[in-house]
Length: 88
Image 1 (tube, rainbow, N blue to C red):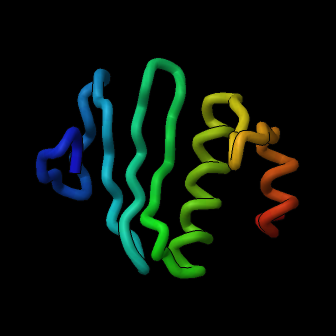
Image 2 (image 1 turned 60 degrees about the horizontal axis):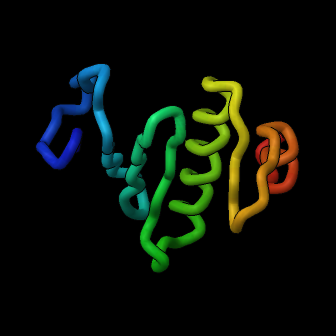
């Protein structure tokens, strides 16, 4: 989904998109954009597979935008996050 509307897998969102919903094995991840910040959101009932997908998505976004990953109020550079969650 793009900004609450159904979208095809190959559809490219407009430059001003605010929310993307990705359907993955194990559930859905929502990416919300506010200015230069991105928030990746899953439901609290997500399983280990969805959590692993969330970790990889957060790492990819932080790497692409040269940002940090903030989890539970703690900011981490992508390399540190990747090492902590076992993605290296």
